[in-house]
Image (cartoon, rainbow, N blue to C red; front, side, top):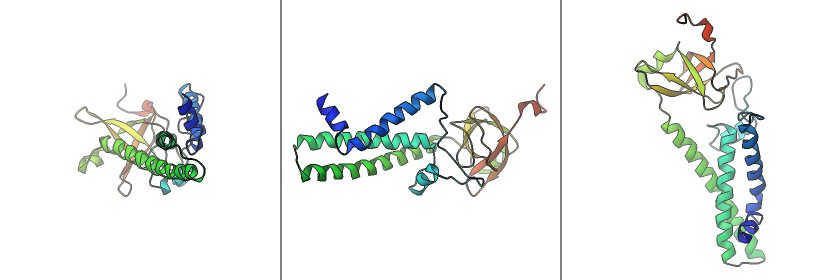
Amino acid sequence: MGLFLSTAFGFPTVLFTPMLLVIVVYWIVAAVGLADAEMLDSVDADGDPVGVSAALGRVGLGKAPVAVEITLLVLSAWFVSMMGGIVTSLLDPDGALLWALGAVVLVIAVVAAWAFTSGAVMAVQRFLPKPRGSSENELVGRTCVIRIGAADGGFGHAEITTAGGAAITIPVRTIGGEVLPPGSTALIFDRSDDQDVFLVTRFDPALDPGQD
C-alpha cells in the first residue's frame, strides 16, 4: 500500500491522480442523474465543435463524447504513469535522475494515452454496423432512435431497423444547433455524402400516419 500511495502521489502520477478522482466523481454524479453525460460536448450554430470538443479534434480525437474520451485519456495516462513510477522506484534513483526519469515516464504516459484512446474510439466505430451502397439512400425518410448519448451537430448515433428486421446503428447529425436526447425518435431527412452521416431532426410519433 505504501508503494501504491507514494507512486500515485509522486511525480509524474500526481498530475493525473486528481483528474482521475474528479472523473470518478463526475461519472457517479452522472449515473444518479445529477449531471448530463454530454455536458462537455458543445458545437456552434453551424454545428462545428467548440471548446474541449474542438481541442480534442485538433489532436485527432473528438469522434466520441468528450467525457468518454477524457476518461480514457486520464485513466490510461494514470495507469501508464503508475506502472512507470513503480518501475523507476525499483531503480532507487535520487535527485536530478529521479526527476529526469519522471519526465520520461510522463511523456510516455501522454503518448500512450493518446494512442490508446484514439485506437479504442476507432475500434468501437469500426464495429458499429452501418449500411453501405444504394441502401443508404433508402433510409432517408424513415425514423430512428437516438442512441449512445445525445445527437447534435458534432456527434450522434441512432438505431434503425432494416427491412430484414435487423437493428443497425448509423452515424447521425443535426443542424441549426438542435440537440436530440438519447432515446428520442428522430426523422432522417437527408444524407451528407461529405461527412458520411445522416441528417436527422426531432420527430413526433403521434404524427406518423402509420400509427392507429
